[in-house]
Length: 351
Image (cartoon, rainbow, N blue to C red; front, side, top):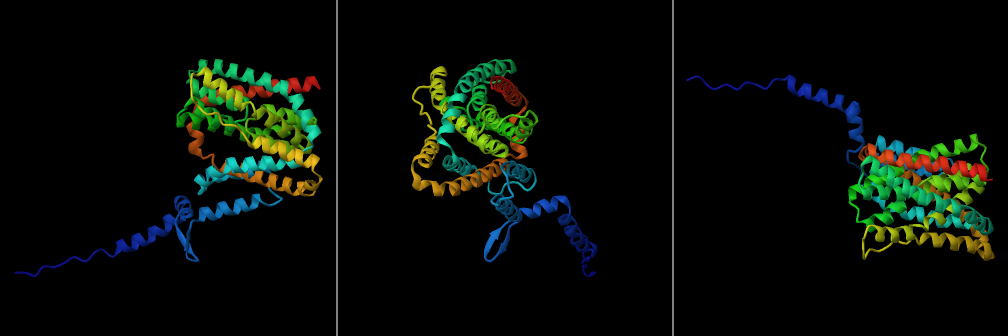
């Protein structure tokens, strides 16, 4: 009987595997995967994507960062590295925006703000009603569901994501409808923040005109304040005041929604941070002891706004953009263009 023999494993296989691993790690897929690979240092686990996020966030805290730049950095991060703190930034963004808006109140002139509010109220009422009616007509033509149409229309007419977040529970809207509506207004907010200041300069709009236009034609408070700050101090004051006065319409619109859509027993979400903004403005105007702190509070508020826009941009991943779909986006664009062009025409010819 011949003894059994074993065939040695080919010596080329380990060499081949050892060669392929570095090649894969050096490739594009390996590079992105490496950013999300857990590592340890000083007894703690971290990922390089978290380091990149932290470095960009740190830059947004410096004087070199501006609201439009912070939004652009967030968008770039979302499309490449991704947001490793998505759940945390989603939770922090609304609170950070609210505290930033309250802080901006310390830099407002109460008398100028009152005048701006008076000038903006007629524009607010007319544009709000017109947007809701137009949204219903265009949404019906596009064949969209009434909940989604109403969410996008309210977001365009009042104050973007805040209005959608308030009206959604009243409608008992599904998560998918909320996500699509929020995605639509956030994309258009990003475009407006970059587009409006150059358009304002090209048309030689005054500070007051531009601030009023921003407050009416840009959805979210964050982008309104960001665009106003990029244009000038007076534009910032007018834009913030008129936009917050506009945001108060969340309450009657939510109540009207409950009646129109026959939703009894729902709770209306009141934007209490607007009262904080008014209180800060009044304290700065009538309490002399507060005035020395006003520049610091305003500076911190502007930093908070910059970080808020970075968080918003970082949340707009490619998956979120794809989820919007064509028809809801068409509705959002039509409403946005009509309200932007219409309000700009009225503002330029009423001065």
